[in-house]
Image (tube, helix red, strand yellow):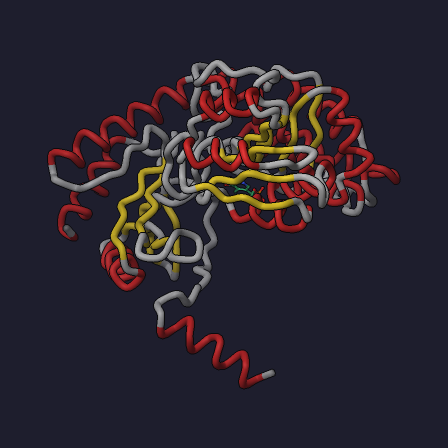
Length: 383
Ligand SMILES: *Cc1c(COP(=O)(O)O)cnc(C)c1O
């Protein structure tokens, strides 16, 4: 086995695909301290700046006094507390749906829903750029898998028209995690209605961030539960804590409680986290200045980058990638920025398609204009 592992790692090194974990000791703020050095950071998914919020921290600490640390068991044994249940009601209300079910992670929510609802006689239609957890979930469900080119609605329609599967489900990211663009949900929902397919949207990067009140990509397009019966959200990104959920009809949630193996056969989230998450949902609603400030920063960055001939993609979200092509190039620019105390990660295949390695710049409501100016000045040195 040793030879095999040495070869595997050598190959990763040679192709600039070797991954290294950077150790740090800071909470999520615009700054990271690594090896005693302070960096201005632009790579977290803490879009609303809630991950280090004093009220959420205080509520988490108090909840530990009430509930202790661990939940002790799975939800169907004795791990389901009032804290979990109230959080589910708050999530249902936030998404304007009848019901919601909390999972430990978004990865598990996606596995649970697709394996719990579909089987060999069914078909899943996925955008090529969907998140890895959706692809893994689809594979594990044993349904027939069709992947259409990114946002190619004609290709999707052709696949739907040909399919004779018993149940068809179109599955897409709401906001694509490495590109920041929004899926063409109105057309997806039209096609779904026409070809009698179900729609599931994973809005991990949209909820809390886009839409008039932070309702995500569905709110942005004014789509309802009728258009998108299955909505996935994560709670470790814009909501700043940890966890994930599925929102939909009472019937859907009841069915998932029976069939979603990543819900049934796993320890429930620590109840104190469920308490902290209720605070975080409230703050996301009660502090709309976070979304407003974030949008202003995005607009400012895009306008100023254009003046400096820095080429961006077509993204209105806090995800603003700069596509560089080769993994070597992406690593080189990312290192050059690190040397100037800016932290932006290079994203390489297989996370993104070959020859589209990139800097994935993300913004948070905790950034200030002066931070953006610093980033722009240092980016300008590199291009
Ligand atoms: C981050 C992400 C997930 C996984 O969520 P976790 O809670 O981090 O496991 C799922 N889907 C998408 C689109 C994501 O970006």
